[in-house]
Length: 252
Image (cartoon, rainbow, N blue to C red; front, side, top):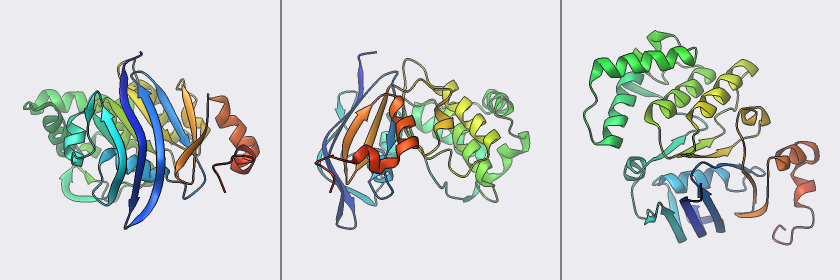
């Protein structure tokens, strides 16, 4: 498990000319689960989008290296092809494209191989049954008219069907009731193996119950200012960020 999957060094990035990440370092090895916590506006979602290559976000310095390859200049679909997956905080509606077609097309793009419909459909239906998703869901347009919980289950379904090397989960559990959080948590746990990794932003410690968290990073003012194990999540829940960040020279 010593193999480095993603290495970020001195990352500077922003949006519309405003710098948000100000020299961030992070190393993720295969098999690890990392959690990013931080106050609103600290740069958590920016980090996820920069890793994924969202065109709105500009990387102005540092490096992003995935399995030895610098991916800083690659477009989002090229990064997806190399094994990155981002589950959005608020997934967009895509009229005209069904859940089934989207996942099948994405798998073909990632693998470079034709995906036969009937075996794929059988696999998809089995996975939806595990996630307690109605079979008719596969033929609905992606996220159109979906409830918040349905959108998040769709993201987990995509994660399990596409099996990326690194899952970037940006508050996948936000706005969910207890039962839905449980399903998302179990889905992420089912995805995670010794050969892939997770980077998770969350405000809900419940989603972490099924996962062995290796590292927790606290992000503030564009830098990681505190690191620890899973116990740091509980400490923040009890003390808030002000208690954790008190005395940090890097934080104003």
